[in-house]
Length: 273
Image (tube, rainbow, N blue to C red; front, top):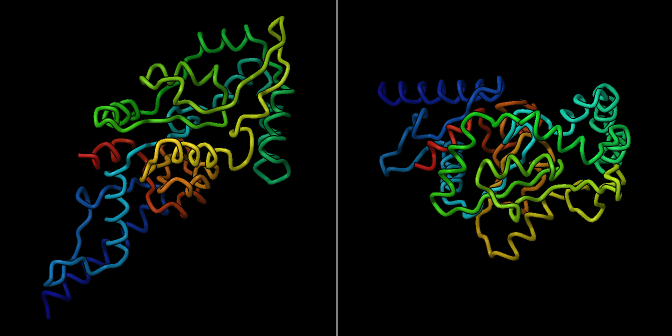
């Protein structure tokens, strides 16, 4: 009885610390790395929450395709905000962003308004891409390389723009055919004209539509979506699992709702074995 009392107290302490880590946006690690599980005499995990977490990590290890958000996930910055700052229109763009976050504008409306403010020319976007390379989030290159070594297809799905994201994809060895994002349309003189309205990612729920198509076209059985934001989380389903990422920006709503939430890509690399 004394032994089981000690074990139960230890298990409750582990659960408390795990909950505290989530509340503070601290890293969540695979069970094998940091968690202690109390086993019954039949070799089963007693705690249902522990069992659920084990299943989630097993699902990650068996993913047959992995989709990443880009801004504040694969890279540390927000691409469009960076372009706006570069063209000295950052403050006006942030105002629109805040309106969108407050539910006053749809994703498409906010995107259109921000681009109308920035009015980027082709030469400006090319100049920005060449002079202001984005910073890869620590650990993401190693994780993607590990997935590619295991022959797991990797996709980038973003509400950002191809001309800003393509250099990132190339640096990670991801083909353009595996990049799904928005496209700026220029006129014959290279001036901003519009953005491609047919892109799924120009609308709320667009990331989920991209993933649904990928599943249908490739018969994937276990697709993982990784990202920092609500638009990433809402893409599961159709993605079979969602992993929240808070290494650059920790969003409380995502942290609380995600079954798996990590602050470092090293945790995901470790879990792959």
